Length: 402
Image 1: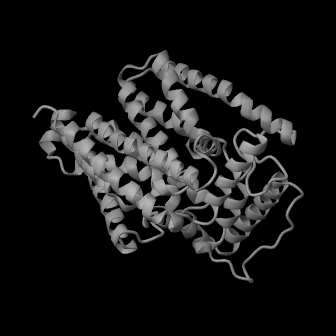
Image 2 (image 1 turned 120 degrees about the horizontal axis):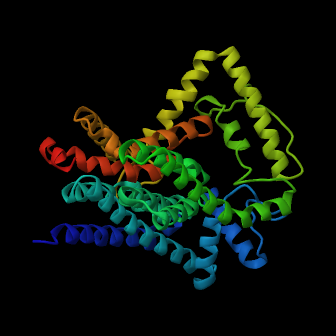
Image 3 (image 1 turned 90 degrees about the vertical axis):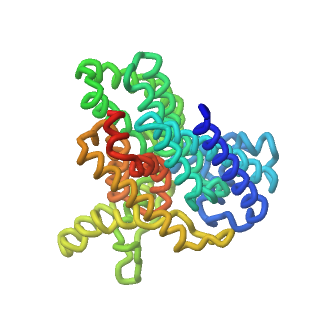
């Protein structure tokens, strides 16, 4: 059957979408982390009321978060109402984004390897327990994962024959991703390195592409920069929220005791508090490495890497799926994808598919500097699933592709 792979992927998407909708309508009262989701919801409500983007408090405009997700929430709530059904509408829209994310996993696997690999990757990602429940959370994860997987797919799709239009499309997707989560800011560096090594673009071509993407970013970011400058009379390129996660990341295993906790006075504004927390964090890092070098070196490398990768973003048990079952599934993805990367290295075609690994290592590095835990790794897991399908291909199939 000519279209059997497309039919299989659509069936996967339909089945998992039904499961997600069942979860949303039967477990909506427990689909909350009781922290950031509440703040995002209140931020969206206040934006609808006043047109001012806030977070946690309403007495000042925020530079703590990027604006895309609150604006996304505001748009859905504006259409469907601000009560229970408005939140349910957000979850349903996120379910749709999650469905398209599965499609991007399939298309990326198909592009890099073949249809069989793409289908296996989509199957694994479809029934990944965190993927089933994440659309129910009022958090950035679902939206960012959708944008991020789109960015990965179109990067591979366009890289063989880049032109100004394709560069502009990639730039727009990347900028949208940045305005959801700033972690992805340096993505073009890795993409340009990838095409320079693998696609035989000249250095001058890569520089031109980099300049094009940078100019589009600057033009797109100008309204945000002007807004931040008007509020705080200082240049804030993305957010001013690095102080708290940097400080929280100084506590080994995130354990704070009366003996180890650093006390400090908060500032008059969130920006002042962020600067204070950053200074306290830098002081703690210096003292930690001076007094307990091995312990802090381990924590800022292997320790935070463990927290980032080893456990799944699955904080509640639903439909009989236990946390430990989700953990086994999660480890299966990691082990299978690592095996595929090892096989790619052995067969000498690793660099052809290396962009995802570069980005995964970059995410890992960033979160080792700040805070590192399972929720932040969730978006990259979908991309890692692309490798899972390749793990089940024969060496002959892979060699035929490359």
